[in-house]
Image (tube, rainbow over all chains, first blue to last red; front, side, top):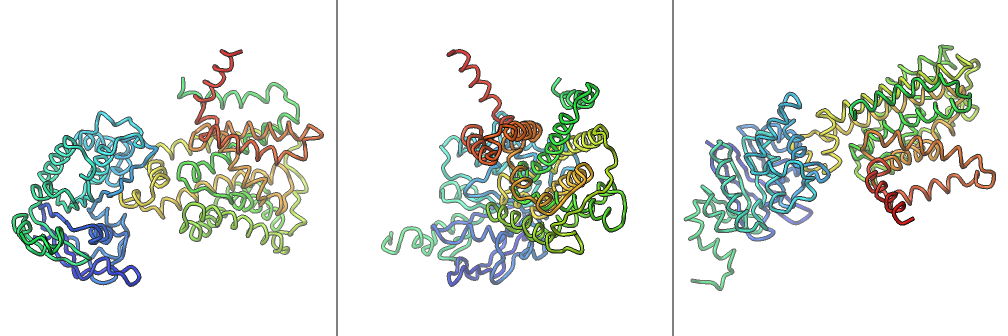
Length: 240
Length: 313
């Protein structure tokens, strides 16, 4: 069953088509990897799905309802949370307060918001850093804080924008474990990632974008052997 | 101990007039408390929610004129201005907010600044409505003695303090700070930023307006240049909070003490009196460079400085 459907979405900035007629769907409970070279339109697609941009053409459907046209906060309330590629922690707040602020979306009281936040911080292994002002957090933990904050809104679907970029190997493993645990909770994930090994190992399916168009879709195995994808990544000369 | 600090200070202030202070000292205290109220109100929007307004004179003026015009047009007691200014200012702030809250950062600041000026010019020119530059004089003030005014403004300040504290410690407070720190992140966390910014503006405006309505009652005279003053209201409001400490509970109170005392002291020095605005400007620059979080926010820094000074002397 598809949870999120992207129907023929195009996004133009002036004359430039950042996304051009892209369609795919995300099934409930799966991890869908979104890959493509720099400038392929991956983050733009997230911004369309999350409501920061209104698509120039096409629409995004979530749980059978059209969500393009809604504001980001309305989309979040319906159950889609996201992280940012360039992390946006609430800098002068503690890690705990960051997560409390997002837990308030569904919490009925401050005590409840705090309880949800603490639970989320334990889940993402940030509990020991809860009293740190988030400005002073190292990048790896800031990336995880993004995930924690998104999770605290109790989403049905999570959009992760390069949550693994710039992590060291041990942080990487920790984050992969967290993503797998999130999946076990039944949360659907769409993830943008450049780290091929990671994306190949955790994704159920992968969609490949290049120059704003979808060039391939399939299981990691299919994608790994798709000549179009290899060409997009390695260039035409590489006929192996 | 720390939890009781507001109550202790309130008690001290409540008992202060029993010392038999002179009428001049009472006046200073009343003005100081009024500025604390305006500072706390501004802090809610500018400090916690991060929307720096350069036009709080707009709300102060509307509050002041609500009281003044009730008296002038309907012969009602200007004290009715206190409750009615809440309504009037809330309405005006919604209209202003509808326009200025679409803008961010410096554009928001400039738009609020112009709103204050628009209202000043309007009140100067709508002579039939506001008496224009003639101003509105309350012929007979309610009390000659300053004592009742003192307790009224003290009560307003106490309510403001606890209201701000309550708001900041609730969901609203978290949302305000989230908006200040990153509006896009806040929006994607499900926070309706437009709505919560409007709430912050409205609350801040209403509290400022009540101070304005009190001012009319206390001073007995207002005109557009006083009530909608760009420098003497809008800018001084920002200074009170900057000097005292942005986004702290006590900052506006501390800032109000310093600014009111400073203004009085400087004005009483014959050669310096005319230059008091220049001095305020210099003070603001010094504060921004050395104590960017104000006296309350950078209190630790200040303490260290004094300790160092004592050690070396």
